[in-house]
Structures are given as C-alpha cells and as structure tokens.
Length: 226
Image (cartoon, rainbow, N blue to C red; front, side, top):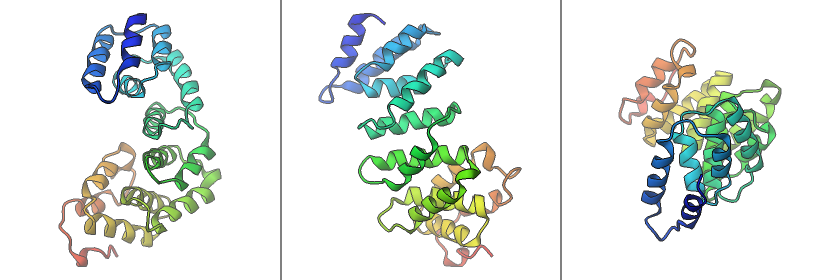
C-alpha cells in the first residue's frame, strides 16, 4: 500500500464521515484483485480497526499463506480492548476454520457487559462449530450459566439453549429455546441458526419442528414441544 493511503486511513476519525471514506479506500483496494502479502500485512498494521474488519469480510482472495499470517494476527489480538473488533476476528476465524485457543474462547462466555457481548456471541458460534468433546463439561456448564443469568442478553440465551439441546437432546433446553423464541420474538435469530448447513433436517431431526416456531405468533399452547 502506498504510504499516503495508509496515512489517510489512519487519519480517519469518528467525527468525520469515516465510513464513506473507508468504503472509498477499501473499494479502491479491492478492485486490484489478489494482493501481495506485504499489502495484507500493511493493512493488519493499520490503526483503523473498522477498515481491517471490512477488509477481512470483503476480500475474496485469501490463500493458505495469507491465512497463516492472519491466524497469528488474530491470536495476538484476542485481548484487544476494541471488543467489537475482536468479535469480527472471531467470526473470521470461524468462517475460515482457524484454530484458536479453546479455553480463551470458553472464558469469553463469562463476559457479557458492554461490547463484550459481541465477543461472547462470536465465541459461542466458534465453540459450536468447533466442538471439542474433551471440553464438554466446561461447554455445558458455561452455556447453562448463560441461560440462567437474568442479566444476560437474550440473543446469547437463544444460542446457548439451542446448542445445549443440540448436544444433549434434553427437553428442558428445547422448551427454554421455544419459550425465548416465541415469547420474546427471536424467530429471525432461530431461523438464521437453523439455516446453517449443519443444522438442516438432514443432520438435525428437530429442524422442521423448530422452523415452524419461527413462523407462529405467541401462543402458550405452542410452548410444550412434547
């Protein structure tokens, strides 16, 4: 990247029309197609996390060597104070099947205040997609803690209830999930979860049943799945 472009990106401030400027610089960069690894490294060293996140989402030419570089960068930034940025890095790692420190992801399930809830949600997704049964006791314990915490955000409770039911097939988690979805209008969230390939009817026998609850209005008679 040209030094001047780097300086312009780093100079973007929140009190400016930062998003339009970032979009302009990023579109210009993406138009170049496959970038040299040196350019990717320059991007990762930018001070503007919004630009880095948007680049990781929109760039379509990552190869094995690029991913090795980014994998190291993600691990180095898991404790970054910009928690929304950390959640973006976790989502990237989930999408590209990058190995992350599993216990650190598990520990993120205990934190939910301020922007840490973004990290929590991204960690739940990573853990579910990368289930390690040697950690099954900790996984279940952490997820139960989420659904039993009255101060926890409901989107996390929906995800936790779904995963607990998917793992254990215990009816209590199914009932809890349906109650959250129907009574608190999280139908879109559940639909998105069910639309993941590994949650479709071929691999999950309750897919169609739960998809029906994404379509109905609140009705207490529908809260008993069995």
